[in-house]
Length: 125
Image (cartoon, rainbow, N blue to C red; front, side, top):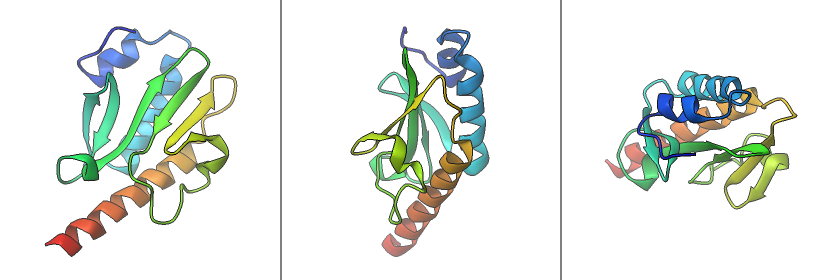
């Protein structure tokens, strides 16, 4: 997939059968973190909350041939909210196209990450 300049462009460039899943994932993230800024980094959508830089990055996602990958940079202080069974590496998760996305778990994890960033910002001020 060609590098997109926006999340809309990224989703539009994805295979047609994957687009609805990406839209639902995007909607889930935006609902869980409505104040997060939506950006493109490393050629994929990501969401940044609060301060800029690594500490404010909540979640990335990308479409692949067989799955949707979700990447969560900082480890949540209380685990990944039930996403562990999808984990394939330190902070990477794979959701096969032939299985439903665990949107509830993803939303819960994003909310936990927002709280974690808020706590960290309060402790640093």
